[in-house]
Image (cartoon, rainbow, N blue to C red; front, side):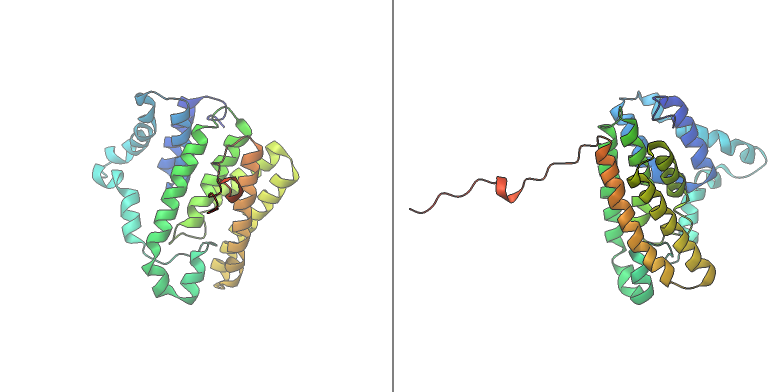
Length: 243
């Protein structure tokens, strides 16, 4: 909300607080980076989130927790927890039906998420003065990254849940209502599969998530996001005939 209102410093402070509480806040990183680029933020503003994170870790350090452990806590979590993931995304199909094959192509998910992050940052940079577009792009960032990445937990759509509801309450259109319902169902399906140890709800939820992503892209476009133009075949020059 602060970033949409142009309060960049406040937004970056909240960003650091969010990261200090939970690593899931990183799903908004492409949105934050794109907004900073679009607003031509000075270098010192880029240092605000890590500074706030360090300040939040200070009490633990003063009571004896090693600074290196505090600085690397999220990286070490990635190394400690190694499981195939149970979020309602396309990787769940591989986990259920071909786990070995899916694991061998995890790099595709990392590459796809990286490409999506770069694209989201670029789109956000070009939409910094369009509040409706910014909210849609923030939601897109929080949903697209966990949807594309392998090894995601069932709870990794909580941020998207909140932003989808915010978008529906702010815009109040049929499309945003559909988006909110679709995102909630995607998230709920993964939780149901986790609670009842039954993969079918999350497998269905992955299809609903894909629909939600498409609808969010449409909402972002309605809000003024300029998608890269793709030259149609009809627009290409025709070769001269032999005669």
